[in-house]
Length: 604
Image 1: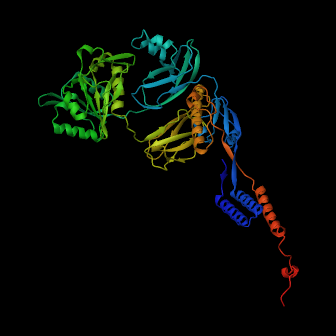
Image 2: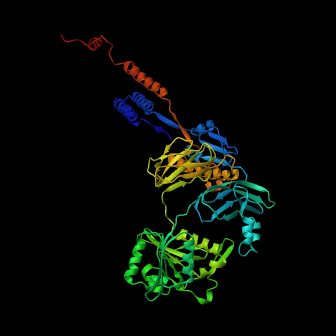
Image 3: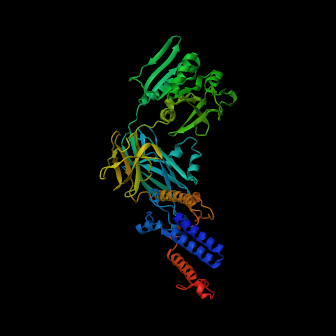
């Protein structure tokens, strides 16, 4: 499509040419009128600064095993109409610095994998490492090793020790694309573990570092109110106390008799209120309203439904439809949890919602067989959680670790979900030396300085896509732990991988980033040009190995030469002048008298 930069002068020139042609037309000088129109059009084109779209050539790029391209190729992308890419592409930080261009991509056939694990976790939480291998062939296993090489966890042994072990080895020996291992860190410190993937013969297929920073756990502040003593409440009290929680606990033992456990420190903002269903049902309406008002202020209310009896109250006050447990299906309705090599089988509560409760209630958690056991609904700034299982006290002696892990995960989901205090937000899955990475902080002041040893200080600035954090771009100079410091925040750490770490994982990250760039290029092309789109672009297929060039190549604007039109304008004016001077034979010559030359007598 032709682009006109200076439209107003061009329109004026064309209007003058049309007006001149109209005047010549009134005198029936048709050829002069044509010259006037042509002169006006030529002047209009010369003044318009018109630009013609010219398809830009495609740029062929081949990325090596490290995903690097030359500086010349980077600069050439801006002038390229499209990109013919061979290899696994670039990382997201590299693609973000490049203009969007239609992409025809042929990735390599080499195997890729991905790792999923928490970079930072609190002491007492179970560390879980998961490896995905979509192209895995045959049986394989995953091992987690300590810094000294000691094997901490093995996916094969974990499967063999799991409940229902008769079927576990067969699943492990199959062609599953995922393996997981779990380990409980004993101390709070930054450590670099090691993971390796082995095939059926024990040959190492892939290996690399697994950095994790274990921080000291912040004690939970829990308020507990129970209308009747129970083994479940006692077991929960013991688990929370052993975990260092600050408890304000009260259990009604009889009429006007209660056992109270006062918190060792004042509880100003409890993480949750844990009550049994009977406590809520026995409250006076005014006291129940006060309890729900406290929930609306932001304190989660966790209801143990084991002794619930008044279904109408829950329906009326909280919109929760519960039904009694059928004695004929009690065994089938049991919930089962596989944790730490043990299986917990918990009985359903006396009253429970349906699997899909409807209304404002949703499922919060499911067991190992995808059966729901916890439900929740929002209430003001807080929420209400219904625990639909009971009799967990039976495992306080036989499987204490599994029970502790189960309740720990439950409290994380119920009492700590959604809490986002001040701290570092590190979203880059694999920082590398010399590659830009983004470091964000929550709770820091905009413009605060970010201090990193070996680098110049930089500023943490707001980002449009991160409303609750400020960020800075950093280029790490070398591999290893990088200390992060900023005013108002505790010191943090980020691990920078070496260029040779986890090449198969780097391959996955580059393919995912390249697929995202291909999708961005298609969207940008459609928004900035009216060129037709031929074919389809499938970014999903890109991650699986194929992306076809699907849009017309980008175009460069070439200015239309003004000199030929200026010359044409001058020639038209010269022709009009010549015709004005020599094209009218009736016009007298200079210095001659028309009446005398005509031979007519002159009156005396």
